[in-house]
Image (cartoon, rainbow, N blue to C red):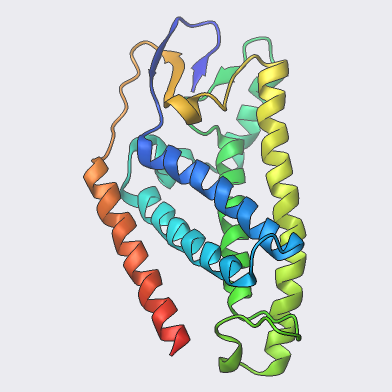
Amino acid sequence: MTSSSEPRTLVRVWDLPTRTFHWALVVLIALQYATGEFHVLDMRWHFWFGYATLALILFRVLWGLVGSQTSRFSEFVRGPRSVASYLRAQLSTNPQISIGHNPLGGWSVLALLASIALQLVTGLFASDEIDTDGPLVGLVAQRTVKWMTRLHEWNQNALLVLIGLHVLAALLYLLLKRENLIMPMISGRKSVREDTALRFASGWLALALLLLCGVVVGVFVWWAGT
């Protein structure tokens, strides 16, 4: 993290795979909500969008382990002391500016990923008891299906709250702190300290991982349908 009073310059912070993941996830979640709640498209599309989201989440987990510096979990997941220190700094006259995710934002990212993953897993076993069943409903007891369906519904509300807080935080940073967190996730560039040198992983590695995740999910879809 850097001090807001230090000289800064516009440098590359977010790589293309991370930015593409972020906005693709936004689109897919919106489409799943639209198909699930408003039946904008046939429910088959709800499942296909879910499978695509599953592949993205698997990719993000792998990219969080071997990807670019600012995308790695080890770079932005910090303990309670770091979060408390960051919060205290924000209340001071010289707040700190994080290069990538700040300590609090890092945990919000994990919470979002965990909630999305839970939504995907429970959806596989959920049923509306009318005409739509998850692909794995037949593998578990009816009692499990009911619990998974309830958890799918409850977690949907929790996920909406997390998304709302995520958007609200970005807006508050922009309005109150004059720190734009949205544009860097579009352009990849952000004003940071001049001597900041970040490490970026190969785009080919990202493509290989994404294809691998796609194949894994594709095999799962084939298996679930047999």
